[in-house]
Length: 119
Image (cartoon, rainbow, N blue to C red; front, side, top):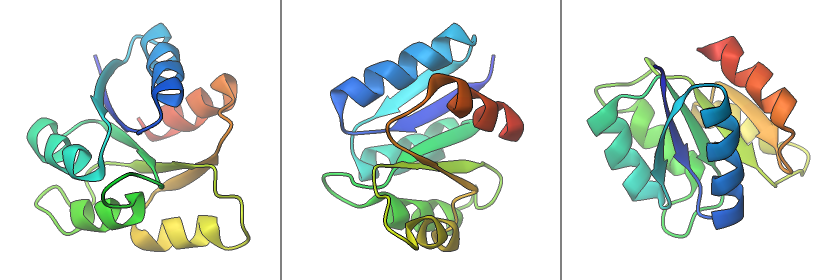
């Protein structure tokens, strides 16, 4: 079973992503802060990370940079999941080291297509 780390501080979004992923027989590891997500990424070395950009402590772009500068570096796909819809936000996430970018609100079908593409 593949492990997916979801770094998301919004309880409703976390519940929805967990439900969608578990319906596809994926194991979900959860973190609600950037630093918690960073620590779990290093500890669990998941198969994929879903990274919220706006987090309460360290933003998702900084956490992505920290992961990319760690011993796990580029071995894990990181998909930014953000409600930011401004021009250039996707590019900023990709420059920070994210593999892909998904805008909120989350569409279950499209998010699973994107996740399966990178697993």
